[in-house]
Length: 298
Image (cartoon, rainbow, N blue to C red; front, side):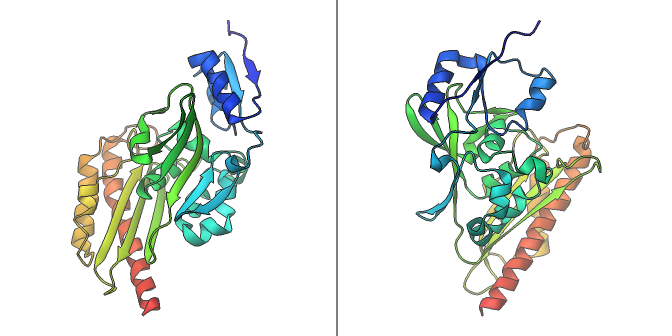
Protein backbone atom coordinates (compact mmCIF):
# COMPACT_ATOMS: atom_id res chain seq x y z
CA UNK A 1 0.00 0.00 0.00
CA UNK A 2 1.28 3.47 -0.86
CA UNK A 3 2.32 5.64 2.04
CA UNK A 4 0.68 9.04 2.63
CA UNK A 5 2.14 11.90 0.59
CA UNK A 6 2.65 15.28 2.26
CA UNK A 7 2.48 18.35 0.01
CA UNK A 8 4.57 21.15 1.48
CA UNK A 9 4.49 24.81 0.37
CA UNK A 10 7.53 26.75 1.60
CA UNK A 11 7.54 30.55 1.42
CA UNK A 12 11.23 30.89 0.49
CA UNK A 13 14.20 28.91 -0.81
CA UNK A 14 15.62 28.89 2.72
CA UNK A 15 12.42 27.33 4.08
CA UNK A 16 12.37 24.81 1.23
CA UNK A 17 15.93 23.76 2.06
CA UNK A 18 14.95 23.40 5.74
CA UNK A 19 12.07 21.13 4.72
CA UNK A 20 14.45 18.97 2.70
CA UNK A 21 16.80 18.75 5.66
CA UNK A 22 13.88 17.68 7.87
CA UNK A 23 12.53 15.01 5.51
CA UNK A 24 15.82 13.87 3.96
CA UNK A 25 15.72 11.49 1.01
CA UNK A 26 11.99 10.90 1.56
CA UNK A 27 11.27 14.35 0.05
CA UNK A 28 11.34 15.52 -3.56
CA UNK A 29 11.34 19.06 -4.92
CA UNK A 30 8.58 19.89 -7.39
CA UNK A 31 8.14 22.98 -9.57
CA UNK A 32 6.65 22.54 -13.04
CA UNK A 33 5.79 18.88 -12.34
CA UNK A 34 6.05 17.79 -15.98
CA UNK A 35 8.47 14.97 -15.20
CA UNK A 36 7.75 14.19 -11.57
CA UNK A 37 4.03 13.67 -12.16
CA UNK A 38 4.78 10.94 -14.70
CA UNK A 39 7.23 9.27 -12.31
CA UNK A 40 4.63 9.30 -9.54
CA UNK A 41 1.91 7.85 -11.77
CA UNK A 42 4.21 5.09 -12.97
CA UNK A 43 5.34 4.42 -9.37
CA UNK A 44 8.96 4.95 -10.31
CA UNK A 45 9.33 7.01 -7.15
CA UNK A 46 7.36 7.02 -3.91
CA UNK A 47 8.39 10.01 -1.79
CA UNK A 48 6.85 10.79 1.58
CA UNK A 49 6.78 14.52 0.88
CA UNK A 50 6.75 16.93 -2.05
CA UNK A 51 8.30 20.34 -1.49
CA UNK A 52 6.55 22.63 -3.95
CA UNK A 53 8.67 25.63 -4.98
CA UNK A 54 6.78 26.66 -8.11
CA UNK A 55 5.10 29.64 -6.44
CA UNK A 56 8.00 30.97 -4.41
CA UNK A 57 7.92 34.79 -4.58
CA UNK A 58 11.67 35.46 -4.81
CA UNK A 59 12.06 37.46 -8.07
CA UNK A 60 15.49 36.06 -8.96
CA UNK A 61 13.98 32.60 -9.33
CA UNK A 62 11.66 33.84 -12.09
CA UNK A 63 13.90 36.25 -13.99
CA UNK A 64 16.33 36.25 -16.91
CA UNK A 65 19.06 38.85 -16.49
CA UNK A 66 22.30 39.87 -18.15
CA UNK A 67 24.93 40.16 -15.43
CA UNK A 68 28.69 40.55 -15.76
CA UNK A 69 28.85 38.94 -19.19
CA UNK A 70 26.52 36.08 -18.27
CA UNK A 71 22.88 35.28 -18.80
CA UNK A 72 21.47 34.35 -15.42
CA UNK A 73 18.30 32.27 -15.79
CA UNK A 74 16.29 31.67 -12.63
CA UNK A 75 15.38 28.09 -11.81
CA UNK A 76 11.63 28.74 -12.09
CA UNK A 77 11.85 30.33 -15.52
CA UNK A 78 9.89 28.15 -17.94
CA UNK A 79 11.12 26.69 -21.19
CA UNK A 80 8.67 28.95 -23.00
CA UNK A 81 10.11 32.00 -21.25
CA UNK A 82 13.61 31.12 -22.46
CA UNK A 83 12.31 30.42 -25.96
CA UNK A 84 10.66 33.84 -26.22
CA UNK A 85 12.94 36.09 -24.17
CA UNK A 86 14.37 38.94 -26.27
CA UNK A 87 17.72 39.00 -24.46
CA UNK A 88 18.24 35.25 -24.90
CA UNK A 89 17.26 35.43 -28.55
CA UNK A 90 19.73 38.26 -29.13
CA UNK A 91 22.70 37.06 -27.07
CA UNK A 92 22.30 33.26 -27.17
CA UNK A 93 19.87 32.37 -29.95
CA UNK A 94 20.84 28.68 -29.88
CA UNK A 95 19.56 28.50 -26.30
CA UNK A 96 16.20 29.98 -27.24
CA UNK A 97 15.96 27.64 -30.24
CA UNK A 98 16.84 24.59 -28.14
CA UNK A 99 14.25 25.26 -25.45
CA UNK A 100 11.76 25.89 -28.25
CA UNK A 101 12.33 22.35 -29.53
CA UNK A 102 11.39 20.65 -26.26
CA UNK A 103 8.12 18.67 -26.31
CA UNK A 104 5.12 20.90 -27.13
CA UNK A 105 4.00 24.36 -26.11
CA UNK A 106 1.87 23.04 -23.22
CA UNK A 107 4.89 21.33 -21.68
CA UNK A 108 7.14 24.32 -22.37
CA UNK A 109 4.71 26.62 -20.58
CA UNK A 110 5.06 24.49 -17.45
CA UNK A 111 8.52 22.90 -17.43
CA UNK A 112 11.25 24.89 -15.66
CA UNK A 113 14.94 25.42 -16.34
CA UNK A 114 15.88 24.24 -12.86
CA UNK A 115 13.75 21.16 -13.31
CA UNK A 116 15.30 20.02 -16.59
CA UNK A 117 18.79 20.42 -15.13
CA UNK A 118 18.03 18.67 -11.83
CA UNK A 119 16.12 15.81 -13.49
CA UNK A 120 19.16 14.76 -15.56
CA UNK A 121 17.01 13.00 -18.15
CA UNK A 122 19.37 11.63 -20.79
CA UNK A 123 16.78 12.14 -23.56
CA UNK A 124 16.44 15.87 -23.07
CA UNK A 125 17.62 18.70 -25.31
CA UNK A 126 18.89 21.53 -23.05
CA UNK A 127 21.63 19.72 -21.03
CA UNK A 128 23.97 19.11 -23.97
CA UNK A 129 23.58 22.70 -25.14
CA UNK A 130 24.26 24.04 -21.63
CA UNK A 131 27.34 21.81 -21.48
CA UNK A 132 28.74 23.18 -24.75
CA UNK A 133 28.04 26.75 -23.59
CA UNK A 134 30.06 26.27 -20.36
CA UNK A 135 27.06 26.86 -18.13
CA UNK A 136 27.22 26.94 -14.34
CA UNK A 137 24.46 25.65 -12.05
CA UNK A 138 23.78 27.64 -8.87
CA UNK A 139 22.57 25.56 -5.94
CA UNK A 140 21.22 26.42 -2.46
CA UNK A 141 21.67 24.08 0.49
CA UNK A 142 21.94 24.08 4.28
CA UNK A 143 25.56 25.23 4.00
CA UNK A 144 24.74 28.14 1.71
CA UNK A 145 25.21 28.58 -2.03
CA UNK A 146 27.58 26.81 -4.39
CA UNK A 147 28.15 26.87 -8.12
CA UNK A 148 28.73 23.71 -10.15
CA UNK A 149 30.02 23.57 -13.73
CA UNK A 150 27.56 21.81 -16.03
CA UNK A 151 30.47 19.56 -17.02
CA UNK A 152 30.52 18.16 -13.46
CA UNK A 153 26.82 18.26 -12.68
CA UNK A 154 25.34 15.10 -14.22
CA UNK A 155 26.69 11.72 -13.09
CA UNK A 156 24.48 9.14 -14.80
CA UNK A 157 20.81 8.35 -15.55
CA UNK A 158 18.69 10.80 -13.51
CA UNK A 159 21.60 11.28 -11.10
CA UNK A 160 23.43 14.52 -10.36
CA UNK A 161 25.89 15.82 -7.78
CA UNK A 162 23.03 17.50 -5.92
CA UNK A 163 22.74 16.53 -2.28
CA UNK A 164 19.26 15.45 -1.10
CA UNK A 165 18.83 18.80 0.68
CA UNK A 166 19.99 21.06 -2.17
CA UNK A 167 17.90 22.99 -4.72
CA UNK A 168 18.89 24.45 -8.08
CA UNK A 169 18.31 28.22 -7.98
CA UNK A 170 19.71 29.38 -11.34
CA UNK A 171 21.69 28.52 -14.43
CA UNK A 172 24.36 30.97 -15.60
CA UNK A 173 25.55 30.92 -19.19
CA UNK A 174 28.51 33.03 -20.37
CA UNK A 175 27.62 35.22 -23.33
CA UNK A 176 29.87 34.09 -26.21
CA UNK A 177 32.37 36.44 -27.77
CA UNK A 178 31.26 38.36 -30.86
CA UNK A 179 31.41 36.27 -34.00
CA UNK A 180 30.47 33.05 -32.22
CA UNK A 181 27.87 30.91 -33.98
CA UNK A 182 26.16 27.84 -32.55
CA UNK A 183 23.86 25.22 -34.08
CA UNK A 184 21.84 22.53 -32.30
CA UNK A 185 20.43 19.59 -34.26
CA UNK A 186 17.81 17.32 -32.75
CA UNK A 187 17.34 13.94 -34.42
CA UNK A 188 14.10 12.11 -33.62
CA UNK A 189 13.47 8.55 -34.75
CA UNK A 190 9.87 8.04 -33.65
CA UNK A 191 7.13 10.14 -35.20
CA UNK A 192 4.94 9.70 -32.13
CA UNK A 193 7.53 11.18 -29.80
CA UNK A 194 9.59 14.36 -29.62
CA UNK A 195 12.40 13.08 -27.41
CA UNK A 196 15.70 12.98 -29.28
CA UNK A 197 17.61 9.88 -30.30
CA UNK A 198 20.66 12.12 -30.74
CA UNK A 199 21.15 15.80 -30.06
CA UNK A 200 24.30 17.55 -31.30
CA UNK A 201 25.48 21.10 -30.76
CA UNK A 202 28.47 22.75 -32.42
CA UNK A 203 29.89 26.17 -31.54
CA UNK A 204 32.33 27.93 -33.87
CA UNK A 205 34.16 31.26 -33.67
CA UNK A 206 36.52 32.34 -36.44
CA UNK A 207 39.60 34.50 -36.06
CA UNK A 208 40.18 37.96 -37.56
CA UNK A 209 40.99 36.46 -40.96
CA UNK A 210 37.43 35.11 -41.22
CA UNK A 211 38.66 31.60 -42.06
CA UNK A 212 40.67 30.10 -39.20
CA UNK A 213 38.82 28.72 -36.17
CA UNK A 214 39.66 30.27 -32.79
CA UNK A 215 37.06 28.38 -30.77
CA UNK A 216 35.24 25.12 -31.51
CA UNK A 217 32.96 23.31 -29.09
CA UNK A 218 30.85 20.18 -29.51
CA UNK A 219 28.48 18.31 -27.21
CA UNK A 220 26.22 15.32 -27.80
CA UNK A 221 23.12 14.45 -25.81
CA UNK A 222 20.51 11.66 -25.70
CA UNK A 223 22.91 9.03 -27.06
CA UNK A 224 24.51 8.02 -23.76
CA UNK A 225 23.80 8.22 -20.02
CA UNK A 226 25.02 11.82 -19.82
CA UNK A 227 25.80 14.58 -22.32
CA UNK A 228 29.28 14.15 -23.73
CA UNK A 229 31.96 16.70 -24.60
CA UNK A 230 35.59 15.95 -25.46
CA UNK A 231 37.70 19.08 -25.38
CA UNK A 232 40.75 17.41 -26.89
CA UNK A 233 38.72 16.49 -29.97
CA UNK A 234 37.50 20.08 -30.20
CA UNK A 235 41.13 21.25 -30.26
CA UNK A 236 41.72 19.31 -33.49
CA UNK A 237 39.80 22.06 -35.30
CA UNK A 238 41.30 25.10 -33.55
CA UNK A 239 43.77 26.90 -35.83
CA UNK A 240 42.43 25.17 -38.95
CA UNK A 241 40.07 26.33 -41.68
CA UNK A 242 37.56 23.66 -40.64
CA UNK A 243 37.88 21.47 -43.69
CA UNK A 244 35.44 18.60 -44.18
CA UNK A 245 38.10 16.03 -43.26
CA UNK A 246 38.70 17.76 -39.92
CA UNK A 247 35.00 17.91 -39.10
CA UNK A 248 34.60 14.24 -40.01
CA UNK A 249 37.54 13.34 -37.76
CA UNK A 250 35.88 15.08 -34.82
CA UNK A 251 32.50 13.46 -35.49
CA UNK A 252 34.06 10.01 -35.80
CA UNK A 253 36.03 10.62 -32.62
CA UNK A 254 32.84 11.33 -30.67
CA UNK A 255 31.20 8.18 -31.99
CA UNK A 256 34.23 6.05 -31.12
CA UNK A 257 34.55 7.33 -27.56
CA UNK A 258 30.92 7.37 -26.48
CA UNK A 259 29.26 4.45 -24.74
CA UNK A 260 26.06 4.43 -26.79
CA UNK A 261 22.66 3.56 -25.39
CA UNK A 262 20.44 0.84 -26.79
CA UNK A 263 16.74 1.64 -26.37
CA UNK A 264 13.45 2.14 -28.21
CA UNK A 265 14.80 5.22 -30.01
CA UNK A 266 17.74 3.42 -31.54
CA UNK A 267 20.28 0.67 -31.03
CA UNK A 268 23.81 1.39 -29.91
CA UNK A 269 25.03 0.68 -33.45
CA UNK A 270 22.46 3.05 -34.95
CA UNK A 271 23.35 5.81 -32.50
CA UNK A 272 27.00 5.34 -33.37
CA UNK A 273 26.18 6.04 -37.01
CA UNK A 274 23.87 8.94 -36.21
CA UNK A 275 26.41 10.64 -33.94
CA UNK A 276 28.85 10.59 -36.84
CA UNK A 277 26.23 12.17 -39.10
CA UNK A 278 24.75 14.77 -36.77
CA UNK A 279 27.96 16.00 -35.17
CA UNK A 280 29.38 16.53 -38.64
CA UNK A 281 26.25 18.34 -39.80
CA UNK A 282 26.19 20.57 -36.73
CA UNK A 283 29.83 21.49 -37.29
CA UNK A 284 29.24 22.14 -40.99
CA UNK A 285 26.24 24.36 -40.29
CA UNK A 286 28.06 26.27 -37.53
CA UNK A 287 30.99 26.73 -39.91
CA UNK A 288 28.66 28.07 -42.62
CA UNK A 289 27.04 30.48 -40.16
CA UNK A 290 30.46 31.67 -39.00
CA UNK A 291 31.63 32.25 -42.58
CA UNK A 292 28.45 34.14 -43.40
CA UNK A 293 28.87 36.28 -40.30
CA UNK A 294 32.49 37.03 -41.17
CA UNK A 295 31.54 37.99 -44.72
CA UNK A 296 28.82 40.31 -43.46
CA UNK A 297 31.21 41.97 -41.02
CA UNK A 298 33.90 42.51 -43.68
